[in-house]
Length: 346
Ligand code: UT7
Image 1 (spheres, rainbow, N blue to C red):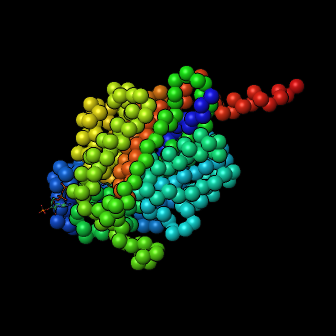
Image 2 (tube, rainbow, N blue to C red; image 1 turned 180 degrees about the vertical axis):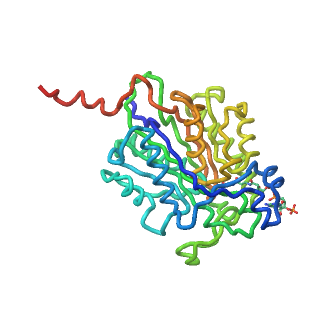
Image 3 (tube, rainbow, N blue to C red; image 1 turned 90 degrees about the vertical axis):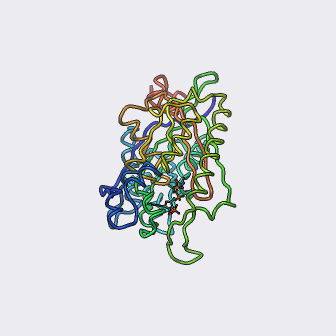
């Protein structure tokens, strides 16, 4: 038997307040036309005063649990990807754990910026495969609005706030059976490039939160080549070609980067989940936000092969291939199959 992590539910949350490109253009030397043409962004959601990353993560987690038909107490691992935690410590994941009543396990944050969700997915999948966790919440949540220099038109127009979550559950799959769940994840970092996208503050450097700084053109060049390479790596590792992929759910940093990946895969754009126009770049939240939208509107269905990719500060990047949902024959509860080992009650 092969132990895998089924992706059995998802949820997301976007703050109510929307800032349009025109609203930004009213106070900055920018325009709706420039932002749309260079990035594909039309608007972004921004957290309300006092609304924290943890608040959004809790809402997304509750929705993902409801979608999976589970309660907080069923969760034994929470991995929360964020570069904008509520506090320097403890982990924002600990707040989520208490709020949803997932007191039967452990919870921690992961910091891989825009690639954070893919990193968190890989970590949770590995805990499940190793038998150290059975049911995991993987969350990406960010309030990048608090890191932005709102006078820097080159960066402040690009980002938004939000949260997305998925639920993973261990399942033992028989040899030769079609593979469901997380098929593989692929992670990379190149710390030599950390100066092209960073925040100029931190607890052990300036003692301040700091502001996001980016050499956009450089990041763009790395994104196009590194994402293409990691997509190839994911497909090759599974002996698949691009035609097997049902949906590309990419990081939403720039529409031109997303289209370049679709082109590389030979995928029509209607097989690419693109939320950038409405969400902008929500960093670690962008991939699970896009997935949740596509699951809820019926595009991504159980059995679909979904390819995730993301890149951001570090540079850190990665990809994951997931056959979404629960195979009909495995429902209702794959791992609870172990009940067979328990003596039946008289
Ligand atoms: O999630 C993390 C990963 N991040 C990314 O993947 C982002 C990758 N980079 C990008 O998406 C693009 O590089 C940007 C969208 C950030 C910028 O687009 P670009 O086509 O690379 O523009 P640029 O930085 O070369 O700037 C071109 C011009 C400059 O003016 P000059 O020097 O040509 O006169 C900028 O000052 O556009 C100017 N500019 C703006 N103009 C109007 C920069 N930002 C703005 C703005 N409005 N908001």
